[in-house]
Length: 117
Image (cartoon, rainbow, N blue to C red; front, side, top):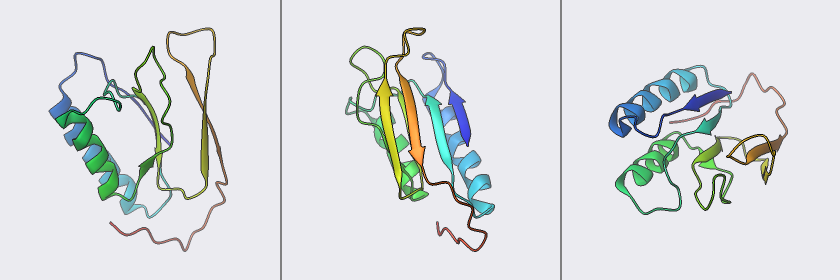
């Protein structure tokens, strides 16, 4: 599991470049990967940055599992993985200005699993 926080004013190009590097290292381990956190990249906006984020994830056979707003009307918090059986619920935790993502998944370890890139 990789947890990420990008400050809203952070450089998106640097962030996405570093994300690609982190995922490349993780995938060399040939394991399942869960990427989560506050990316401060709006999924519900049609922007170049959003497209680059999802293109990067897709290049590692990863998908976003949440499609509901996590802060006001924005989807800026993500649960992204290369797991087939993930279910994510967005809930109100009442202790943050962001909603919480709750993951339910079968995380059985499969040493022989080979994940292509």
